[in-house]
Length: 109
Image (cartoon, rainbow, N blue to C red; front, side, top):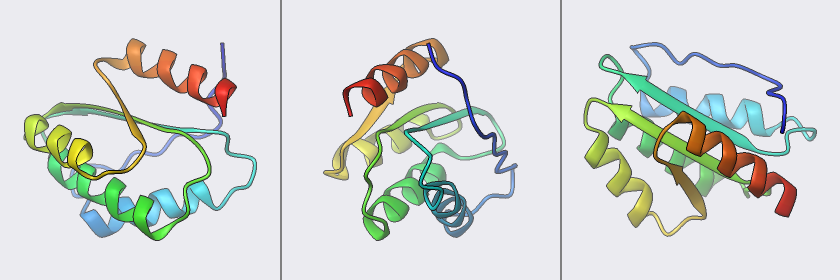
């Protein structure tokens, strides 16, 4: 098992820039061992979140595993953006799957 260290709610008005800024803040903490992004809902567009994650990952030298679970508006587009990014971003099918994957990835890292 593992324990979450931080929670961030990007809210319904999040932009790609806000998502990027949020991930930069989280990843600036040297004690962070992994990041689980869980998006569920109809307000926030999954493609916007995915673009923010990809942009942040490209700007920051990722040294920790990142697992993303998307569910909601434009989920197919969001998953496609992550898949085509060429980055080592792990996707989860649901929250339980994503949680298992981030714990495993952190232990293997």
